[in-house]
Length: 207
Image 1: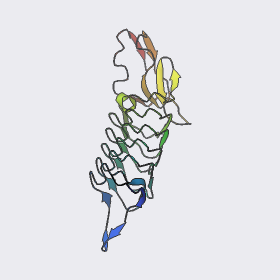
Image 2: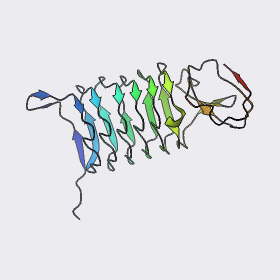
Image 3: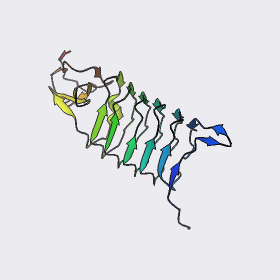
Image 4: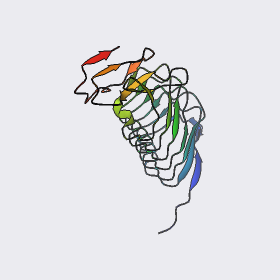
């Protein structure tokens, strides 16, 4: 079979004099010729599964601060993706947005983040560092399922994520399902949904 040319793509801000404001759902799904993509400052959304399973995609750069939502499965299966500079305007990381991005090592969500949804980083086995904004309101435990390299801050049987100012911002899970007691850190703002699931011996929880 003929070889596929690998290209760097800068998406257009206008076409035939008409403003382009986003990336449609499934727009580049399984497009294996893209190595990098730059998204213009004028874009306000990226649709669900827009870059799903783009096997050659390594870097994504957002030039502006207008996008508030990283859609469902947007970068799912992009197994060479190592660098994403997200806008500080992002409020929601939708389900499975970065699922099985196995080369991704870190991500900064320190802007206006409110929600990290189900399976958002599911299977990101190389993900080591994640920075979460103080504005966060809701996190699901399964968002980090299979993130074996992820570094947590520990405190009294709790595994925490956050930022340099507050490493105990989010109680993501417990470290020992057999523990009988747990005290949540005083600086914690969010206890992840299902954080204590499976803790059948837990008899004392201090908030």
